[in-house]
Length: 176
Image 1 (spheres, rainbow, N blue to C red):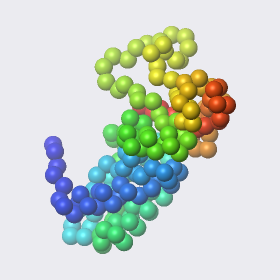
Image 2: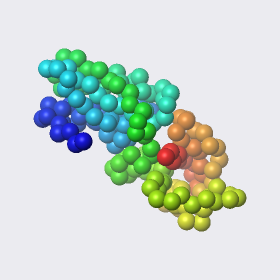
Image 3: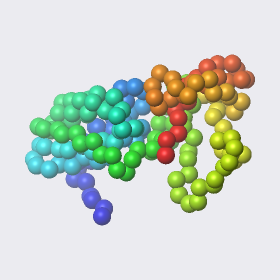
């Protein structure tokens, strides 16, 4: 069922989407792909649907508070309720092209696009398949990179090093 947004809902969705991500402030919540919808359920009262990048994400509380503040102050909403929506689950495929560009410019390798439809090839042995897209250095673009740690400053990033320019960088891990 396709729901048409009212002009107010469209405006509030745009405002909620402009809120910066608290962990990666270079990205807006719309670019991250976590704002799923805005619905006016009574005059001046709205509900925002927000999907965390992973269950238990500590940033969800800050995102919710920032959305509530933005919609009250800039959107004129009298009451804002943020509802966490876990289905459909968020994946890194939800990050927009603009968000991926901004991550790269900020020095973070964006997640590789992961195929989510059709048959999934079974690979025995090393986890990297021959046709897997390499993680490219956001500084020089080289595909010759090495994983240093599966974990970085946040749970959604890994630490890598470029073997060409020797610069370390974060890689936003793929999640499907």
